[in-house]
Image (cartoon, rainbow, N blue to C red):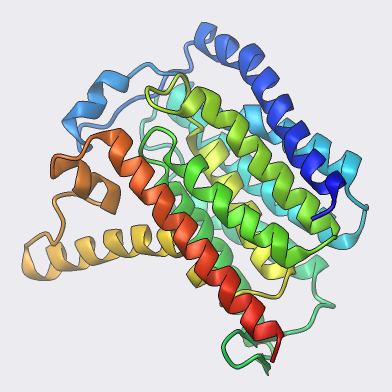
Length: 317
């Protein structure tokens, strides 16, 4: 990996660290504190009032580094659009929760509409791209035709919401996303997407200075949806849509735990897990929050390494 790419990640880390020192006290003065819902683990109630919307710390760093270090091409602009577009949706959700004091934020219908709008704009400006997907283990391409656009929508919706679900413990979303981004930096090679990926990874690392346990700030939906948009963009623009299921395996498991829990409770009146998403199941089982976050970050690293290995084997076929 070229030195300029590594430098991009380091600069994003530094800018985020500096931004945190400036922005977090400002969020605290504005009383942009997190409201903790009663349906979550009881131990989390003590976190009420911790500043949120910390994603605002990462976004300028990612944008500045991407625009300074990367070649300005359509792939970069599309990645930036998905990153910023989902950050804007997250910001609106956080704003409603914190400023307007409506704890649930955007309604499910409003959020779905906005995410659909972002997906539609992405598809419109990326319409000239191939409609085929890469089959990793086979090393072949499968043309989906117009069904590819449905896949784009589902991937964007699924990834952003899955990353959002993962953001439930101090340091978890940022820590678990770093290996995913590093894997995509390798897949992207010496391109603008690699710069974008490493800039986002560097920003996540810088954010962890303030978000590790005990967190001084939460990223909020502003940050988690932005990260989901970034990961989805990298999968779509590198043509590794199916591989995201492996590289982002932790997100998949977290989302599935919620789906399984809901289906089981509605059909059988019984819960499979103590609480979902899955990280809360381990918390209520007696694991310390730090242990759960570390274990899940290691699991994400393992998924990313496995996905990268599958990619390298696939491209050799």
